[in-house]
Amino acid sequence: MDVTRRVTMRVLLLPGLAVLLFAFLYPVVVTLAAPPDGDPATVARETGALLSDPHLLPVIARSIRVAVLTTLICLLLGFPTAYLISRAPARWAGKLLALAIFPLMLNTVVRTYGWIVVLGGNGVVSTVSQALGLGKVQLLYTETAIVLGLVQLFLPLMILSSYSSLSQQDPRLEDAARGLGAAPGRVFRQVVFPLALPGALVGCTLVFAGAVTAFTTPQLLGGPRERILSTLLYSRVNVSLDWPSASAVALVMTVLVLAVAALSGRLSKRGSTTS
Image (cartoon, rainbow, N blue to C red; front, side, top):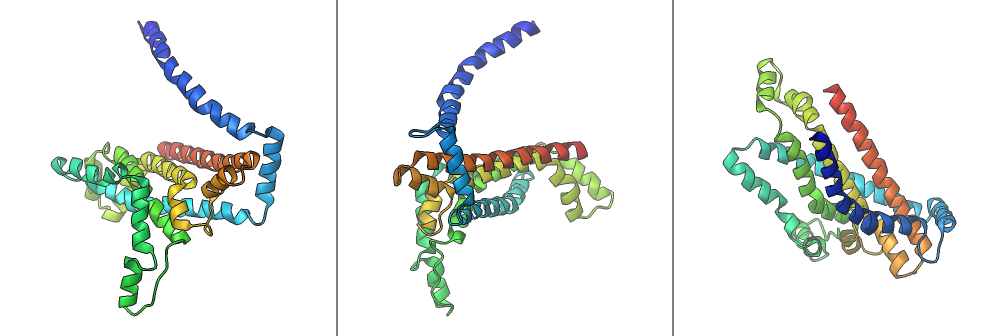
C-alpha cells in the first residue's frame, strides 16, 4: 500500500516538475549562463568587470543596503503585528489578517504612485514641513523613498510568514513563563521569538529577495540617480541591448538571493536545535 502511494505521488508530481523545469529553470539557466550574443566565458568576463568597476560597485552596495534596511524594518514592524493578530480573539483575528494583507490586492504601480504624491516636492511631507517652518523637503528620488516604498510593498509577506509560526504556538507557554517570574520582555525574547524564528526567517528571505529584484518601485521612486541592480539590469537589456552584461547583473542578483536563503536556512536549523 505504501509503495503504491509513493509511486502515485511521484507520478502526480511529474507534470508540475516538468513545467517547473522547462518554463522556469531552463530559461533562467540559459539567461544566466549563455544569453543571446554571448557564452559562459563572456558572462564570466562581464561578471568580473561588474565586480571590479568602481562606478558599478556603489550600485551593488546600494542594492544590498536597501534590501537589508527593507528587511529589518519589515521585521520590526511585521513581527509584532503578526503577534498581536495571533493573540487576538478568533472573531477578530481573521479580519485583522485580511486587513494586513489587503495591500497585496492593489497594483504595485498604484501604490508606488501614492508615494510619489506623498514624497514629492509639493507632497504631503513637504507641505507639512513648510507649515512647521522647516523648509521644503524633497524625499522623492532618494534612497529613503525606495526603502519606504519597498517596506509598504513587502510588509504583508513578513506578517503572513510570522503569523504562520506564531499562530501555532500554545499561549500557555507564555503563561507558564510569566508564572515562573519572567518579565513580559523576557518572555517575548526567550519564548515567543525563538519558537517563531522559522517563520520570521522565511519572511526575511522573501522580503530580501523581493527587495533585491524589485524594479517598478525603485525605478519610480529612485529615479535615474539612485540606481540599484534591478534598474541596472533593465537598462542593460532594453537600452544598451547588452545581453552578456545583463546576464552578469542577473547572476549577481541570483547569488545574493541564494546566499541569504542559505543563511536563513542555517539560522533556522540552529534555532530549532537550540529550542
